[in-house]
Every structure is written in C-alpha cells, then in structure tokens.
Length: 530
Figure (cartoon, helix red, strand yellow):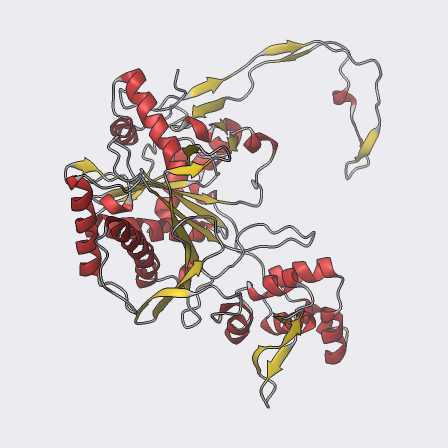
C-alpha cells in the first residue's frame, strides 16, 4: 500500500493517537532527594519520580500523525498540547529579532580604546567565532577582520584589497583562519567595502569563470561556472554582484529575482538547444525575454517532432539562503550569505564500473515514482487529487475556524503550507497551470507567464519566512524529466532551519515533530504577507 496522505476523494488522511496504558514498575531502588526550596523555605522534592506501584497513563494529549503526500519524505507528528496554544494566537508563530550585540560597547566602560581593540582581536578563537557571527557592531567586525587577514590599504588606511603571498607556486591570500574570515565576511553588519574586498569581488573566491550576467537598474547578477563539478554540461551559480549587495531577503527586489531566475532559465534552454542542434548564435550578451521564450518554444517543438537522441535530462536547482557558524566550529548552513542560486542539468544515466549504466539520481524522480504508484493503486491522478485536497482542506484537529492552507496564489501557481511539513515552517510552491494542454512539470514546459508566476511565488515565500524571523532557508526544485508525460507537476519546497529544530534522532528516521497545526501556520504566513 502506498503510504500517502492524499486520497482519491480529495481529502488528506490524518491519524490520531490518544493512548491509555499501564506500565509495570520494575524499579528496585528509590533515590529520593531534595531539589531545592520555595521562596517561603518549603522544600521541593522528587517523590513523584518514585511511585510505589505500577504506573497508569490515561487521557494523554492527542498526537496527530500525517503521512507526507510523498512517502519518501517521511511522516509528520503534531503535538496538540503545543499546537492548541498556537491556534489561540497564530501571531505567536515567529522568532524575535536577534538582539544588538557589541562587546566593544561593554568594554568601553572599563578599558581604554586601545585596550578594547586588543581584547576583541585576541579573544579565544571560539569566542571570536561567536562574536563574528552575532556582532552588530561594524567597527568591532572590522577589528576582527584585521585580526585574521592582511589587507592592502590606501594612504588614508582604507582597505583596497587583500594581501596575497606565493606558496609552492600558488598565489594565496594571507588569511590566518579561513572559517573566522568567512564568518566575518558573511555578517551583514560588516561595512560593504570590506564585504566586497573579502568575498564579493570576482576572483577573490577562486578562478570560476563568469559566463553570464544580468543587469537592469540596481540589479546585477553574475553567473559563475563551477567547472570542477562532476555534473555534465556544467554546474552554475547565479550570484548577486558586488554592485548589488544582497545579504537580506528584505533587500531582494522583484527585479533581482527576475535576474537570478533568468540566468537559470537561459542556461538550461541554451544547453538543451545545443544538444538538439538549434542553439542560437548569441555570444557576449544575454537573451532578451522574447528571445528566451522563442528558444523554449523551439525546444518544445523539436522534442515533439521526435527523432532526437537527447536523453531525458532533469533540472537541478537549489537555493541556500543564510549563513551561520557556531563557536564550537560547526557551519550551520550555506557557504555564503550573499544571495545566490545554483543549477545544472542531470543526465539520464551514469556509467557503472563494470561498463553498464544505471539511472542517475534526481529528486524529481522520487515524485515521479509516487505519481506512478498512486495511479496504479487508486486509478486516479495524484496531483489533481492533491489540488482538490488543498481546496477541500479542513482543520487537522477537527475544529472550526481557519481551514485554508493557501498563503498566496494566482491563476498559475499556489504557495501553501503542506499538511505534513518536514520543516516546522515548510512552504511549498506548486504549478497548477497547464501549457499546451498538459501539466507543467519542468521549466522547459513553463511559458513566460508561468515562469513569472513561479518567480513571484518564490520571492513571496522567502519574504514571508524572513518576516517570521527565519534566517536560514534551503529551497529545492522537484522537476519532471524532459520528454516524459506522467502527470507530474513542478514543485518547489522551502525549508527553514529553526534554532529549536535543527534535525536529530527523529528527523534522521523521517519523523518530523511539529508544535503547530498547518492551518494556523498558514494564517501566520498570510498575516506577514499582508
């Protein structure tokens, strides 16, 4: 049986756990002690921890179990004790803004200016890591930068570049601690000129070639080729350029999103057109929006005509927004705070060591398997039933009040809260439009209007999560392979990392524990969107 919450009648399957049971007491010894005292001196003990006989548990609070629509993504459990409290006030589903942090300000009250700078620069390394990640003091951050890196400075002392040295025939920057250097450079409160010099100038992070760009008004995006990737046809990254520093979602404009996504669409279409022998003779400029759509239509027509030897490619797209580094030395998210997106094409096959081939992995194929199995078991269309279930949704706890999971939608896409979230604040964006009479399953099948709706929905998802307080969000694309006709629809998932839910024992098993009902989280998102 396919374990999914989607049902052919357009409803979500939701389970309820309300157990009552008795536990045999097998304890040999008691270890009673005093834990402390109340304000009036009354002692507080631990007698309740050592019952004399068996323990009966009755009337536990309800736990809701919701299989994920896609079985490979596990199962979600909602604790009604936590969720009921948030249902009373959906506005409580948020994170408070981080506090202002300045060690310099505290030390200024006790030490001379020279001593303060010396102390900040010579803190034990774990404390410097923590300060580099959390400080909101620009001057303090520049001190930390100078403590771990040598700069070339102008006559007035303003940094103009990083100092380099030759080691074993290679030119390397003079950096004492790379993790500290990166953490400082990824702090939004570091002055912009330091950000540019340390990590944003083309070439400062390596020799990756820039093979595309997008410029319009205040927007500028570079497309880097990561030629050392194992992925055929190149692995690409669209990075906001030094002239358009974007460390926060609040700084990301509609045009910025258009630029980031344009480079993705352009690269995919150009690679496919080249494989089909219809690549445009365009060099040293980007394709216009009209040219891009014309090229997509030519690709679709060429594939529909048949007689091509192009394999069933899949797109690979992702966005890691946010950077953090702990004092204990753990990188907690992306390698770079500056807003960027990565993409590539995945082949159909990969060569085995024995000379045979096997299917190359792509997460969209997992969705395709669910769609096929669902049709086999229920003789129904998975995504049609999924959209119907979203439209028919009722509260997880069976109560009245908020019912909708939808955060935002237009005629072509819907941004919603999954009934079974694998991140406490997960959002998904699903293309509900058809093109040429068929479901849109990848960006090649998406016309200009659908791609525009995807871009808009994606930006709204990030804005909503940022307004709730999320600072680290992983976004992924589940796309259908090229040339297949299986009813699969293009889907994006937005997965925030929350301080109290970074992943552990339960998540490793595919068991995701939530403290809110999805309907209430949708309401919290709609409020932030407004």
